[in-house]
Image 1 (cartoon, rainbow, N blue to C red):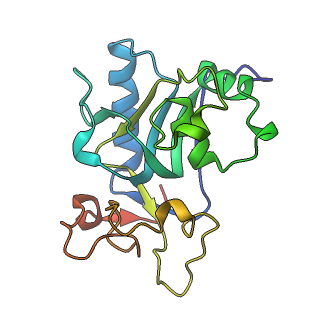
Image 2 (tube, rainbow, N blue to C red; image 1 turned 90 degrees about the vertical axis):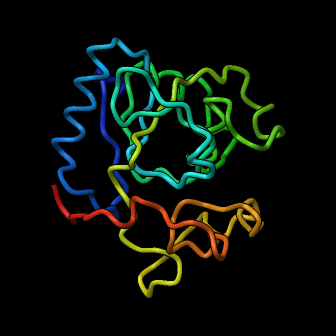
Image 3 (cartoon, rainbow, N blue to C red; image 1 turned 90 degrees about the horizontal axis):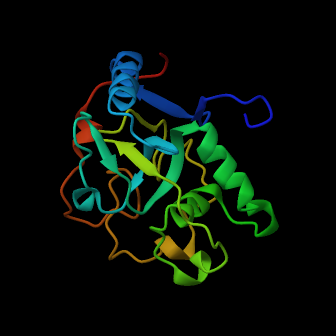
Length: 187
């Protein structure tokens, strides 16, 4: 992306499901972001929200919030300046999963030791709300495989996540509105 000087790009994991009217909703969002000249580096379209109620709404852009700490990188839009910021941080020299790296770079990661290895944590991160993409499989599904979900960071069952199917969702926690929406396997 940086080598080709692309203004922005969309990133999708290979096992996501799109919410109804994904394309129309994304185009409208990006139009509004452009109209208000929002300075953005990354906009999550799908992720595991940790505290969705704590996120600040972006004025004059419907369905957009300032991203707080989250996990997973199901899908996101990234700007050229955002990609350059991530590359400048030299993440491969520190070897950590991208869904840990991104919250570090927008200074919302909960682990201060992780953050201490990256000096410039000024990524401008936002998220759609409701999310436009969700996982195709959840913890406990026969097809479910994860290389990060069993992280010790998530072995604390006192932390409620926003995915109803996740084995890390607290028993009795309110259900996510997102999972009640219709989703599609393709655009």
